[in-house]
Image 1 (cartoon, rainbow, N blue to C red):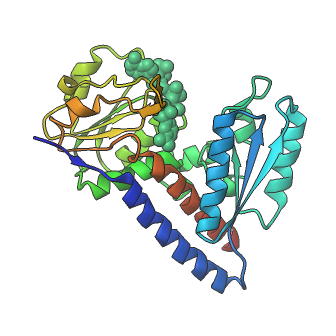
Image 2: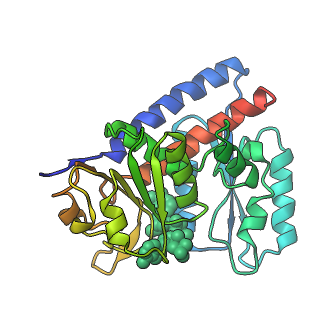
Length: 289
Ligand code: NAP
């Protein structure tokens, strides 16, 4: 068997087209106003700078505005707090995103938690996490939301299915598990202390890997016919440098029914859902929610 390749690039493109149409309708409804995303980049980490630039460009492509607020690498807690509070209070700013990771002197969880939950387009505040846990409407973390759309596009049936998520980060693993649970899957979360990891993975109808270890998930970890989603982004030491997932793609594609590639799988979905969240935040603010 050779698995269907789940084409995240094409699916994300469709999401973006939908957002662009909705931004147009939003603008017509609200006298020419458009949603806007403010990113905060502390320091000069080259990878973070590339991500932030990509987010702004994506905003412009769907008719929103995206603007970066840079702070020096040695910015104090007070400086970051002051900027977050200013953006929270600005009615033209629909979404606020604090680019992670932060320099060591700053506490990412504390500072992310200061973003107004109605502008929390990364879905990382305690309010957003709580709404997700309660199954209530709210802003969801972008990558897990994107994975749900990929699963739908792959025709994965989640109702009653065994879903295994490897990784329990606040950014991905925990919200992913929650979304799967809300979709009535039977969910197992694995992490670095999990015993017999391969055996647990072999039970999965839907297997999602978000670990950060290149090609950790082997062909014999996968149940024949499973849907496999590879969230990992690992830089391989090749020339030129390439991106490798957490799944041994060539081996697993022989066993799985469907699989995401790296790159071109989950990655493009994250920005598409950031755009969708920014639009959703703008709508919530206009409706006074
Ligand atoms: P993270 O915060 O470092 O979490 C990694 C998780 O993997 C932890 O829960 C850790 O367990 C678990 N883990 C580590 N080694 C393990 C092992 N040997 N066996 C089983 N579990 C193990 O990372 P993250 O932010 O969730 O990201 C994970 C990966 O996804 C990274 O490669 C990241 O670049 C990628 N990612 C991609 C996107 C995208 O847009 N495509 C978005 C987010 C993340 P403990 O909790 O026990 O330490």
